[in-house]
Image (cartoon, rainbow, N blue to C red):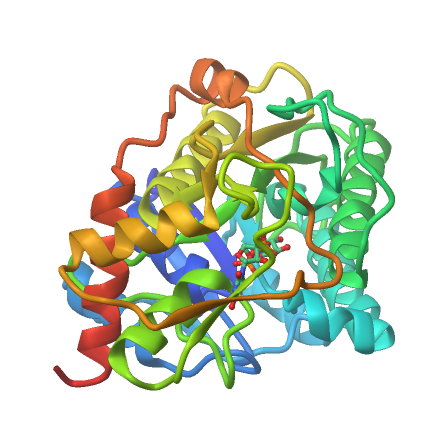
Length: 358
Ligand code: WQD
């Protein structure tokens, strides 16, 4: 690695969003270290990243970010200029049933990353947050100033708590001088950006990386594609009696490649010294509300297939509607979602066909 190439540590980088971000970072000229304990994924996407980028030299560190010495070791081994922290559990339903598992994993892993970053000369930290922090609100679209509502599940609570932890650590370490990152034992400032994702969907156009949920998918689009390919019998649309145009819930579905590009823009903002505050928050969505039924119908149309679905009772914990005001990210990050919903739904189907060997 030449001296002036910046290196980004991607924790949870073998996962769905982490692998797409790794591709975009490498294609933007960054060096990347991927750390993952493979608790929620296998190496399929990491192998896909190597094929897409043509890079077989991407360091992969199989570590659990809850293990402080392992995280510390990463910062001693590599000169790390920025960290993107994805390593977390994220199943909403599971988090209601197993709060201790979620608080331990999602909080301890992030605390270890922040502690090591502070102790190694400081670092730029990009946190994978979620629109879940907004909860149910009737003031739509939500801006970054919209109040956070009490979390509906432990998963959402960990996202809110981690945002607050990051803000506190940024404030506390701002007193440290700006030391050169990495490898130094000096204390250094931590600067941070939280990206609040709306609903990430789709796959890389190569169909070499995508979402690989373990077991029965919780999320809508993987359940749709698995139904379409025959892995699932029938899609249940949870509730068609909501106060929305067609009775089904409204969400802001953001293409995963667009989402990945927002991470590259945020990393550049931090490394190029363009931040206006030491801790910033951005909504990452399309600003376009889409209903469940609209998405199902569009999926059928663009992929020229018929989906077996039925209307079922509402799912506990679901909110009626949420979509983003993305003007801050558009302006400050110079980023905007570009991929059409049609292309995103085509990519989701192509990925499902790829993993089914079709
Ligand atoms: C979307 C809509 C369901 C499955 C969650 C997390 C969020 C983010 C994305 C991580 C809802 C309906 C779903 C199904 C259905 N995760 N649905 N049948 O709940 O909006 O957000 O995942 O970043 O943080 O909270 O996403 O895809 O589960 O649901 O009708 O089989 O699809 O009721 O209206 P959600 P989802």
